[in-house]
Length: 359
Image (tube, rainbow, N blue to C red; front, side, top):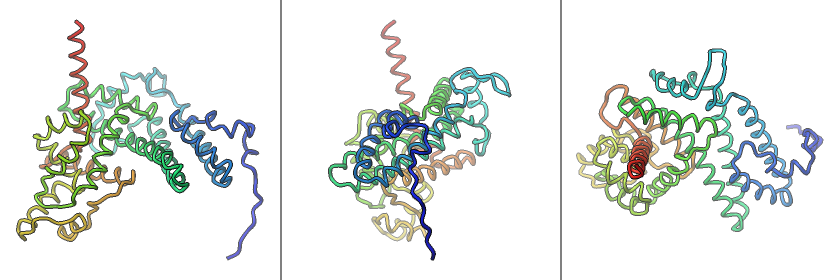
């Protein structure tokens, strides 16, 4: 195979900024949060001196993401009044539209352009932050904390995608109080506007801990009840999670959604596997044996990669939505849906109690 030689061109020649401006990523960090920018600057300081090739690769990627962010920011704010071709759009009309338009099927074409573009930017950011984590992870012990910090930011980005799904699902649930549905719709607008959500920040560490803990538990698919597994997990969690477990695990939907989360297979597969093990008189099997006993390939043991977490979530989400649409038995929501619904109700009760106490 023939090779070509290319003349190396300084990327700074394509920029209007001076090289000094370009070297300081904090001056051009539109796509990133302040916390992420500090981490990026640490990595760029190292590569600028010790790895010029990766420095320029990373710099180009940062500039590309900033350029996309600048384009997204030109779209009208979702939180302010805007005069569009279809009429006047306000925060209130957007919220009511989200609640009203709940037809079955994909809702992409009903979402604001800014939301769709911002979501694409967030995915690109997540991949970039993950690449930074991997690179820093290969630099040795001195960069372990930096790598872990990039991992955390990657996971938070993934949870923003997940929370968007949860909000859309909860908004469509007409069994929920209208004030909750409007609150979730407003939270969704704020998420789309900034892709930096307080709920994501609060929920992510909890569910990530549960996800991490589930992989460390004894992988015995026996009674499949998950009781001992759940107790082991909950002992290490925060008060909000423990409160959720105490108050909601008696609900069949919540307990089944928890089992799906813990075991990595659907409620239907859990039921089938229980019957098979009972018939064969087998007390327990490992995760790696699940596919063999079910007679189909299932990914019961996902890794800690943020993409695995999201992939497994979407499978549970799609199964839950199908059951709800077809009126089938089993959980009609994911564990994430139930947990965020619980947090919303708990926060609302706390606000009401605080208001009552002040009056």
